[in-house]
Length: 185
Image 1: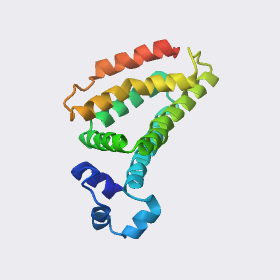
Image 2: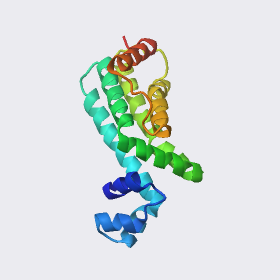
Image 3: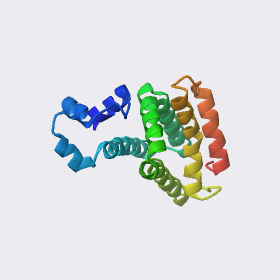
Image 4: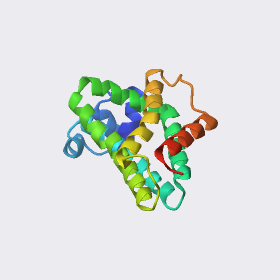
């Protein structure tokens, strides 16, 4: 998956052949087809792995910290992730392939964005159960929080990273505004 991710970012999805992945990583074409079903399946696996890594970071951040600190840490992770040239390149690959393959787009959305929102909703539910007076449903809060950053991710991908990056003060102001509206006192 690491070799595929590198090649997708370097050459683009369309110009990367599975033979290129095998050449870089070793193994065989038969194994790639058996494990992933093809190049689109490999792209999905790469993206799912990235979401799982983000989920692990979220769990680490949320262990014993107050909600504002956790959300600021997550926001900072998202900002760094979406400003990373490799992430921008991979986002462009996913956007382009999603246009060509609506089934891929639906699967991608379900295994990445919805998965991340679900993990975040669980965190909001935990805080609610611990006594935080949330202003609304944990699922809605999770969708709103993630949505604050998806815009930047798509803008960076479309503009080839030329968009303005959020500075620390702007990021903190967004998270503070969100926390006040969410009822995370």
